[in-house]
Image (tube, rainbow, N blue to C red; front, side):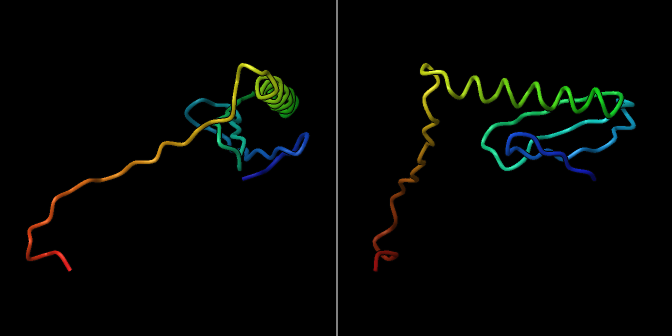
Length: 83
Protein backbone atom coordinates (compact mmCIF):
# COMPACT_ATOMS: atom_id res chain seq x y z
CA UNK A 1 0.00 0.00 0.00
CA UNK A 2 1.33 3.41 -0.97
CA UNK A 3 0.40 6.83 0.40
CA UNK A 4 0.17 10.31 -1.06
CA UNK A 5 -0.21 13.68 0.63
CA UNK A 6 -1.63 17.01 -0.47
CA UNK A 7 -2.48 20.13 1.59
CA UNK A 8 -2.16 18.20 4.85
CA UNK A 9 -4.42 15.31 3.74
CA UNK A 10 -3.11 11.77 3.35
CA UNK A 11 -4.51 9.05 1.10
CA UNK A 12 -3.82 5.34 0.99
CA UNK A 13 -3.51 3.90 -2.53
CA UNK A 14 -4.14 0.30 -3.61
CA UNK A 15 -4.50 -1.38 -6.99
CA UNK A 16 -7.93 -2.90 -7.59
CA UNK A 17 -7.78 -6.02 -9.75
CA UNK A 18 -11.57 -5.96 -10.05
CA UNK A 19 -11.69 -2.38 -11.38
CA UNK A 20 -8.27 -2.59 -13.07
CA UNK A 21 -7.20 0.82 -11.74
CA UNK A 22 -5.64 2.48 -8.72
CA UNK A 23 -8.05 3.39 -5.93
CA UNK A 24 -7.35 5.92 -3.19
CA UNK A 25 -9.03 6.65 0.14
CA UNK A 26 -8.38 9.80 2.18
CA UNK A 27 -7.63 8.77 5.78
CA UNK A 28 -7.87 10.35 9.24
CA UNK A 29 -10.93 12.51 8.53
CA UNK A 30 -14.61 12.20 9.51
CA UNK A 31 -15.81 12.03 5.90
CA UNK A 32 -15.47 9.26 3.32
CA UNK A 33 -13.49 10.46 0.31
CA UNK A 34 -12.42 8.02 -2.40
CA UNK A 35 -10.96 8.53 -5.88
CA UNK A 36 -9.42 6.48 -8.68
CA UNK A 37 -7.19 6.70 -11.74
CA UNK A 38 -5.61 4.47 -14.38
CA UNK A 39 -2.17 6.10 -14.16
CA UNK A 40 -0.19 7.79 -11.42
CA UNK A 41 -0.79 11.16 -13.06
CA UNK A 42 -4.57 10.63 -13.21
CA UNK A 43 -4.57 9.42 -9.62
CA UNK A 44 -2.64 12.49 -8.41
CA UNK A 45 -5.01 14.82 -10.27
CA UNK A 46 -8.10 13.09 -8.87
CA UNK A 47 -6.67 13.23 -5.34
CA UNK A 48 -5.92 16.95 -5.57
CA UNK A 49 -9.39 17.63 -7.05
CA UNK A 50 -11.27 15.81 -4.26
CA UNK A 51 -9.19 17.45 -1.53
CA UNK A 52 -9.76 20.91 -3.03
CA UNK A 53 -13.51 20.20 -3.29
CA UNK A 54 -13.61 18.87 0.28
CA UNK A 55 -11.93 22.04 1.59
CA UNK A 56 -14.26 24.26 -0.46
CA UNK A 57 -17.39 22.49 0.84
CA UNK A 58 -16.18 22.51 4.46
CA UNK A 59 -15.60 26.29 4.30
CA UNK A 60 -19.13 27.10 3.12
CA UNK A 61 -21.29 28.67 5.88
CA UNK A 62 -24.29 26.44 5.07
CA UNK A 63 -22.27 23.36 6.07
CA UNK A 64 -22.02 23.57 9.86
CA UNK A 65 -19.84 21.10 11.76
CA UNK A 66 -21.36 17.68 12.33
CA UNK A 67 -23.16 16.97 15.56
CA UNK A 68 -22.73 13.44 16.72
CA UNK A 69 -25.73 11.56 18.07
CA UNK A 70 -25.72 10.30 21.61
CA UNK A 71 -27.65 7.09 22.10
CA UNK A 72 -29.11 6.06 25.43
CA UNK A 73 -30.45 2.70 26.43
CA UNK A 74 -33.25 2.89 28.96
CA UNK A 75 -34.16 -0.36 30.67
CA UNK A 76 -36.07 -1.45 33.74
CA UNK A 77 -34.39 -3.93 36.03
CA UNK A 78 -36.08 -6.29 38.42
CA UNK A 79 -36.00 -5.21 42.06
CA UNK A 80 -33.52 -8.01 42.89
CA UNK A 81 -30.96 -6.57 40.46
CA UNK A 82 -30.89 -3.06 42.00
CA UNK A 83 -27.85 -2.40 44.18
